[in-house]
Image (cartoon, rainbow, N blue to C red; front, side):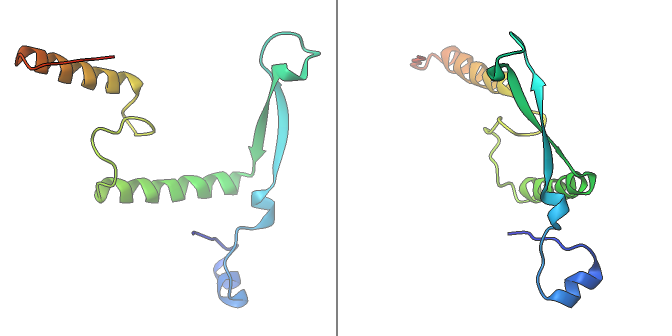
Length: 111
């Protein structure tokens, strides 16, 4: 678990680390999607969070991504939620694998 403090002095002074409460708060605003504006189902909630909170999330994400890449935590076959890969790259890799098996005259079943 990663917990963050407001400043170096608060990290040393209080003996515990936590995210400032104002960073955890968000303003939720309904954004219209489509359809009748009178129907609440046609809106989606958008959370507007603090800028320092967003910056901290990006910094932490960068550290986690670097660790995952350096330690090769995620295999090359993983395409979802992987930078530079997508459902399309997964489909292309699958198609390439299946066509190479067909070229090698191996038995292939695809459902």
